Length: 363
Image (cartoon, rainbow, N blue to C red; front, side, top):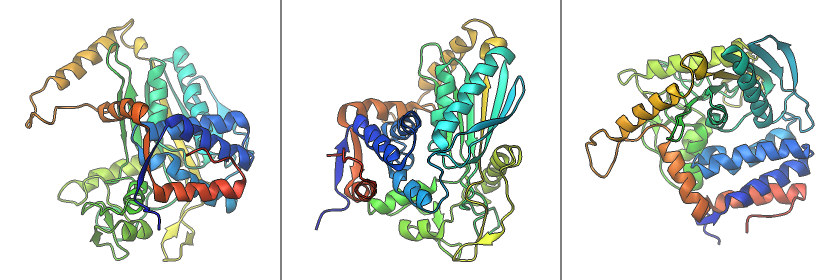
């Protein structure tokens, strides 16, 4: 019997190539497949393992259910100088999101600030990828998405009502790496609970709940129940703040774009669900030079980051970090060592690969 928890280190280039090969075999246009594969492999390389190649089996299920249109052509349905709305036509969420953030940055070059919304989309991977795209262009970037699949239990509630609704924010410094915040509005991303299950590890108490709304340390129970707490975990620790942030994301990504649909169906456990193709995204780009001019913004951000890095740590072994530091360090490490993937995940991906007759590229 193979050890399902055994870890294999796979180069990021192989992961990107494998994902691209699968998407192409599904019928996704080659350029679109490459953009999506880059976004997913980037997540693995930066240590966001819940949003990398591990999502491919889930996407395969959605494709089989008709929830993913592999030949979709997203269209701009409304556009003004500083705003635009794109209908994704049930496409993969990654390419249309790259398209939207690039459009927001191009508009912001002329207007100073611009926002682009996307509706009728699908899961778009890691929100931080799109915020960092803006930072690479010298822009402050924000990226958010809501999720039709309910996962967050509202404060004082028992059942999940909102998705994990992530928020990403990135800002370019002059010398330092961009500040890069990427967070779910839940205590943890639901896919991270699944990753713990794949690795045979217990989850910390407070991450997830069982079907009765009680905290659990069993990742299989938590993932099956699809119940996670808002950031804060409990009312006493501020879960109402995470709940409020999740609502903010829902408003910007779903209500503002026209992607919100009131729950009208229930799943096997009787929980309300929204349309699986009503995923909406929100992208914002700000040109800091319109406010400051020249390199002043980047220089001041460098000073702020340097100040935080120089802050005295409570434990000398744990220096003060800023958002993005752990991911940048992981990227540097995995560039040398490869991405650690458990055998259980490789088996899931191999099954997808064999069924679509794509070449196997992961060892």
